[in-house]
Image (cartoon, rainbow, N blue to C red; front, top):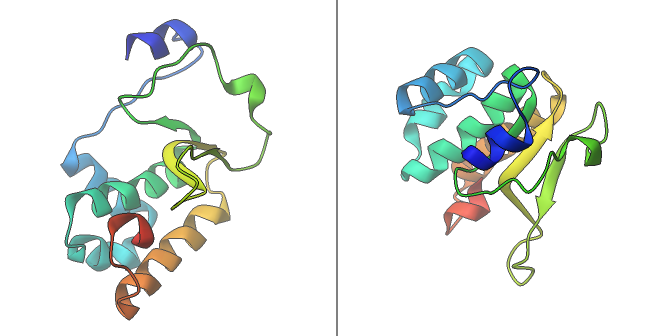
Length: 133
């Protein structure tokens, strides 16, 4: 956390944190029609992954996992008005990770992402968490 405060000081940046109840409220605000699917995920990490999309949809900005260290401000590397996700070093089973993502608020990508997660949940497409979310 301190590395992010150092790399992206407040102001102008804001550093926000959520607990499980706050994540659920964010999903309810961003995608109220999908709250029952969120509640129906079998694994906690699935709900957390889903909620990340809600947070970026509502607030925009940059999301980073707590274990991601900032070595400098990433904002100069982001394309304005677009969604950015990090490439995965584990290319055998994934291309991207959701450990660090950025976008403007209300970007339609996040709605498309959660719709796809719901489709996969309904169709039983997944066998592991990363295949669902």
